[in-house]
Amino acid sequence: MDSREADISHLERKIAQLEQHVSEQDKAMFGFSKQMDQLRERLDKLQNQVDAADSAGAEPMEKPPHY
Image (cartoon, rainbow, N blue to C red; front, top):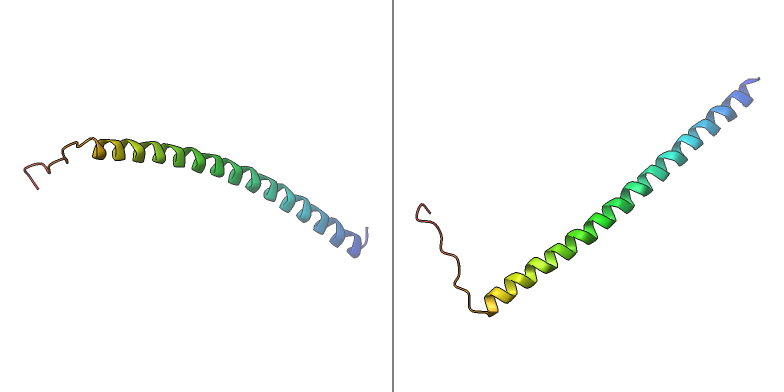
């Protein structure tokens, strides 16, 4: 194998490694996106609970005496 073929082979291996890396990053980003969607849903539910408590006339929480 001459130098040019060795260089091409090296570049092909690097490209394959980069393609694998991109695939793994895509999977990780998809997982993060799903997690963000779940967290947004939980936050919306909590905000609705707080809003419902406020509109129901709930007494605001007082600070503990040590404040």
